[in-house]
Structure formats: structure tokens, C-alpha cells
Amino acid sequence: MNRGNSPCGQYGSDSPRLRIRQPERGYRFSIDSVVLAGFAAPFCRGTVLDLGTGCGVLLLLLSRLAPAMRTGTGVELQEDLLDFARRNFRDNCPDGRLVAVPGDVRGEIPGVATGSFDLVVSNPPYGRAGHGRRNPDPGKGSARHEVTCALPDLFAAASRFLSAAGRFAFILPYPRIEEIEPCASKEGLRVEFLRVVHPRDGAPPSRGLCCAVRGGSGTPRLLPPLFLHEGPEKYCLEVERICRLFRAG
Figure 1 (cartoon, rainbow, N blue to C red):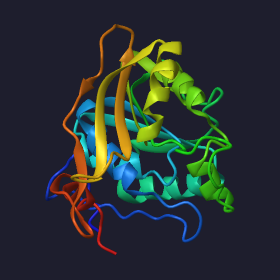
Figure 2 (cartoon, rainbow, N blue to C red):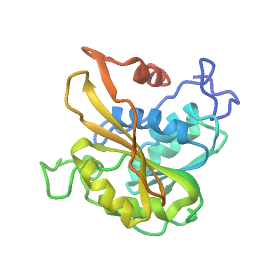
Figure 3 (cartoon, rainbow, N blue to C red):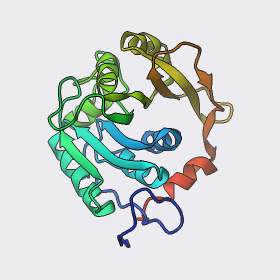
């Protein structure tokens, strides 16, 4: 990979491709991070905060997709994933504009100022606590189920760190969409945009992409649906273009 001196915010054929390191066992990022990056990129500018950054893939994708992004901060509770995020930021964005810090989103995070981020993003644990089969692997369990952070906690954190005109972009399983409005309104937020994700044309929805803002009123604007696959083992062109940002192998 040619690291060069290219700024993080460039996106195109000349941008360095991303090489993502992640644990061989335990939690590994999924296509949800790719889909969320594509959804959040048009809203991405200035300072960005990723709540539960994992290995840092979401911020790295945004650094390539959003030229207006100045800096990114990833917050991660699990120490092993935090180490991967730091390495990935250093290797793929050596100008230092992406940083990873330890912290629990349910409380104050040292060095992360409240009310200072133009965009907050999150690919949160998607399973309700106490529902479904819990993964025996601690890393996967924390990443996929609400062990350390429930949905109301996530909205409270987003509201706490957002600037007055900031936005909060996230992805959830489609059945949990109904939980968003109560969580958002409690924190003075409302859903501005909603995009439904289907595995393929004709299949029921599987995910919901949401963007929330402070205050105001009105119903969410429903964006055209995203059909993830065009054929067997083939992503749609929109998703495939983002996947090309990854370095092969």
C-alpha cells in the first residue's frame, strides 16, 4: 500500500486503499459498517465521533468517502479492539487526524469534549439484552448484544457529544426501528432521514439506516431503499464501490 502524504479526506482512484487489521478470533466487522459509511458520508464534515469504534473501520471508510471530514475520534471499551483501531489509524491515515481513545459511552470520556462533534456515528450492538442466543465469545457478545451499552445509553451519549447543529447516523436491525423515536425524543433528537436495507430485491427489510438531528418536528424523510445484493454472492454497485476501498488480501 502506498501511504504517501495523501490526506485522509481524499476519495478516488488515487486514494490509498485501506488495509484493515482485526482479530483472527472474536469480533470482526461486518458489511453493516460499509453500508453505514456510505449512508453517513453525505452528512460527514468537520469533527466526527464513532461510538464503539471496534477496529476503526467506519472512521477509515469515512476518511476516504468524505472530503469535508477534518478529524475523527473512535471510542472503544475493549482494549484489544482499541489496539487494532490505533494500528489501523496509524497505518492507513498517518497524518494523525484519526485517533482512538478508551472509554465507556455511558459516562464521560477523558479528552473527548461534550457538544463538540459535527457528526456522531455508531454501529451499535444489535441484539436486545436478554433476547436471543448470547455468543459465548466475550468480544462478540459485547459487540453484538447490549452487554455494556443499551440503545437509550447510545442516544444519550450521541446527544451529549453532538454540537448544536450536529447529526447522529447509525444502523439497527429493522425490527428495532420502532424503538428509535422514544429514545430520540427523550434526548431532544428526531429522525431526519431513514433508509431501509433489504438483503435483495423482493426480500423483507433487514436493517434501518437513520440520521437524527436536534429538535424541530416532522416525519422522517424516507430515502430510496438499498438492496444489498444484486445476485448470488454479489453486492450491488453502490456497496461494491465502497468495498473497493479495501486493499485486496
